Amino acid sequence: MSSNLLGDEIEDILRSAFESADGELLIVDPSADVIESLVELGPAFEGDLPPLKLLADERLLKDVMDDFLVASSAADLVENGDLEIRSLAGDADNSLLVTGERVVAVVTAGDRVAGLTTEDEQFVETAFDTYSQRFEAADEYNLRTPAISRVRETMAASIGEGPRADFDTVLSSLETARGDGEGLDEVTITLLVAAKNDVLLYDISKWGEDVGIASKATFSRTKTRLEELGLIDTEKVPIDVGRPRLRLKLGDERLVGTDAAELASVAQSMIAS
Image (cartoon, rainbow, N blue to C red; front, side, top):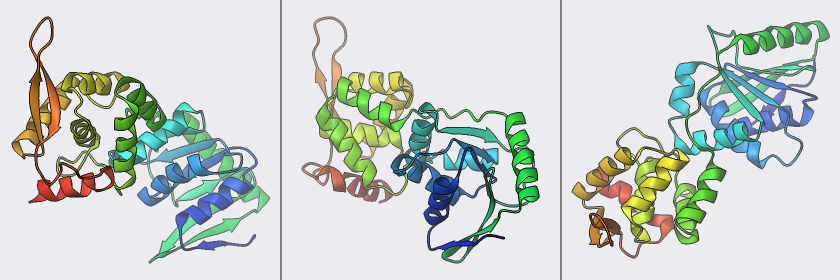
């Protein structure tokens, strides 16, 4: 039995697993906190990231990946070839981190977390073979959210560096960006940033559809909702041929002049009121 891993944060356990893995790291039946920590730590890890294979309950995956902040970071890892995600068929007995050298059971108690570890060769070999086979037999999870690096790159190219910088600042001010209809999801955030920068609705919705954030129809519906709430306004911009296009503007004096770091909190308070 090797030394157990103790820490205040799940990241401590994951970082140790990354550092000690000599080959693939299987993450089996993790909690939401483990998944969120995994996709946050993965891009920031300074060493050689082991190939990550995430095998998780599909309902949990859907719930966790409804948060744009989590899903877009996970998509980055997937696109870079660092992470594979598959749906767990049935339950596992524990939440596990499994490599060819050791098995770690992740246990939380209050605000503490522990990794109960064994390096018993026979047990580790059996566990690694068992969950590797389950992973290979599992269905691939369809992560529809675009990678955050692609979102940033294409927004800068299509909409401008200013809106992209504001978009990053707004995201960094949020703990979650969930599409639950009540908070600030990725479409709402994008439209608010576009309005702050006087971007055309056509341009932001076309970019959003092309990059995979949402359809033009979803952008249009969300724009209408934000107009009804008084958060944004529009003005018509004539074009040479066809109907005038709409320029997005912030619609409330509480938002006009607000810097990007405070835009989300002010908008959220207005939506909730």
